Image (cartoon, rainbow, N blue to C red):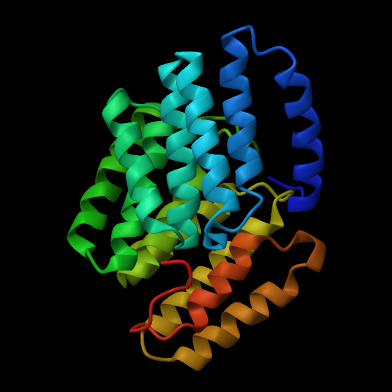
Length: 254
């Protein structure tokens, strides 16, 4: 949640080497799957190959573990990553659908799958499906949300509201977006300034979508520039591109 992509790649690749030597233990396929998913997140979904290939490998590893919770989580985490980034939406939909088919038991994986599919629907202009999925996601969060605040494997209240904030901005629902942003800010750990930048950039997207494209882009750029460069992420750069992109043009990676 706090390290940059290069640091995560270095650390996780070392862990994967260790786990690879112990895969005769079926339980460790679940561990490998989760680490692969985290590793995939360090590549932009718009790359079209690296991130998606790692997400698929993670799903295969989870399947080998026989652990349905892991199978749902890795697919759901991939779906929310791609949906939030607005990239490889077909893959996001496929993985979300697979996760929901494996189990409908409330879990963080199912929550991620629903919210990832909701973002993909919103970007495509299917606002009715996006709203329905957002409502299902909220009900799932009520049953499965986590108290852990700063783990990528967790979805606490503030992080759920980051998901909702961007989704509502994409839907043009300013009231819901602002409510989610304020809720997230109240509980966002001070140790994670990057996510405060996400929320400010969501406001920039709302401004741009309301018709003031230049004003929205300037607002988002100011928020991004206020964050130290070493805290920047691939997702923030993709979000900046979305704010700057005219609404009637497709985002990169579609």
